[in-house]
Length: 146
Image 1 (cartoon, rainbow, N blue to C red):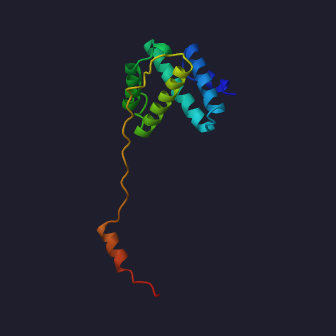
Image 2 (image 1 turned 90 degrees about the vertical axis):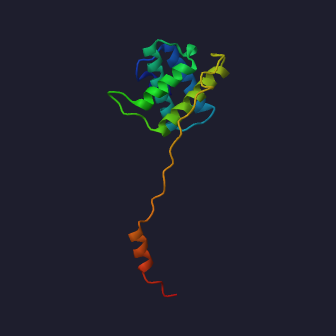
C-alpha cells in the first residue's frame, strides 16, 4: 500500500527506499499513524535521501554532521526554494530521530546520528492587543441594562 508513494519522488538509492518503505510500514501498521503524518514523513525522508545521494553518503554511514548540514540547508533555503519555517524544521528533526531510532532497533545501524541534533526553537506568537483608541471606544460604550 505504501510502495507507490515511495517509488515516486527525487533520486534516492534503492537501499534508502527500502528503509523508508520499512519505516513507513512500521508507522502505519504498528504505530497506527495518520495518512497525513505518513505522507509528511515520506516526503521528509525522500528529501533526506536525495540530499544523501547528492553528497555521496549511504544512509548507514550518516553522521551528525550530515544531518546538521541537511537541516541547515533547509533553514537557509536556496536559489530555487525559500527557507523552511522553524515548525517545519522541528517536524523534520522529529522524523529523522524516529527514522534513525527505527534503523537502530532493526539493527541496521549501531550509532545514533541524531543524538546531538538540536531542533530550532519555534518563536511564540504574541497575542494581538487592542490599541489605546480601541480600548477608549470600548470603555465609552454604555453599560448593559441589568
